[in-house]
Image (tube, rainbow, N blue to C red):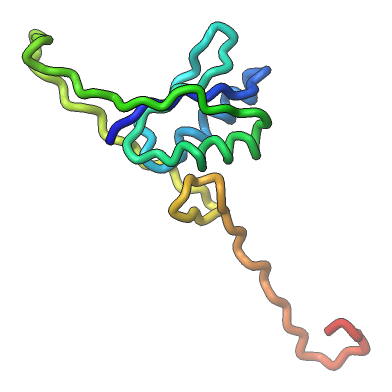
Length: 133
């Protein structure tokens, strides 16, 4: 089910807006993300199967205050009512997020549970007086 979610996010500067767009775009199932509102404080996310609670939780963790304002189903346009000269246009396909080199992502959204690779182990073959090893 394709849905549109409007989230009010604390985004006082361009850097935080960019970060919010990046976090939302990397979430599973997101088709499009847009900043709306007079104060540019609302994030409009359209997608199929987006976990809104996980996305808002991630935005709160990374940016601060975030609230879900609206979640509604996006109804497909009826192609018989709208006639374009080129014919009906196919819906946009979701673009998978680019892989991040340092993290592996779980099934949730990309930012909720990232795991760092284990640190390399150093094994010393010489006898030592070190009590830690």
